Length: 333
Image 1 (cartoon, rainbow, N blue to C red):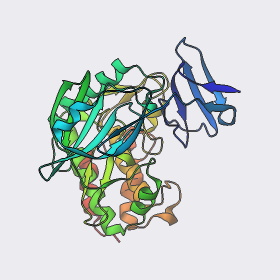
Image 2 (cartoon, one colour):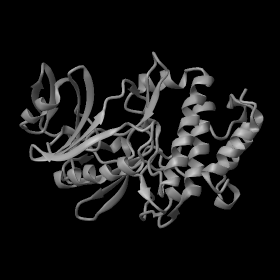
Image 3 (cartoon, one colour):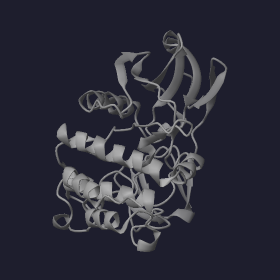
Image 4 (cartoon, one colour):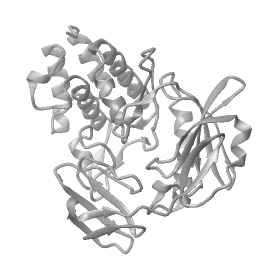
């Protein structure tokens, strides 16, 4: 029996992510996980032979809301931003987030520097640095559909990023009920979101960036108003990227083939694949291989299918080219 504890620095798996462990999804490894230990040893292990060791937990309370940490931390500085109405203490990033309200306005606070339960195997220094690195990305990629970053600063022995609050639900794997509900909304509403995804990522390219780790958790959706926004651009990067030996971080369904293999170049054409795969996620029940599951027009199917060709040269070569073909296909139903 293998036990995953503090010595594990990363783990990759198809399917489920374990809270408290740094993860990287990969294709074609069903029921297996890849483990890399701090001493450099690596192994593929059957998931049935692994258990996750939970760190020691302590309970704290702010404004009547309880949350868990590995050890107590002084969050008294939070009060200057308002009254806490929600806490997110199980983020895989190792940060902890607060929804606060002050003078009738709500904000989203993301703090790195406390030992969260999910920070097993991560160094606080790395978690703080990772949050700092997101700050210029939100500035450079500012867009009406991207949650608005107001400020960021060192405070309370760590680092804090402050955003406007968006009143919506995360639609990723960590929120299975909201994810299912989102996938069940009418196609006309999903098309609004999808067109927003295309618009935002054309903007990302125009700003000199490429999308890394775009996934269903990036989407925030309000089921009452049908408004939506995007968050979690932490891994978006300037210019092209070269993958590590085991590929690049991200959802295997949405990642291009080159993102899944080692030492490959990730470019805008890789993002074209992600845009096409996102269409199959939304409009084909997460199935790229069954035309009968496609719920939009045949012409749109052809556009999306071209985008997910294995060979980069067979795809649309830019996101704007993909959008142009998508619009030209026209008959959405």
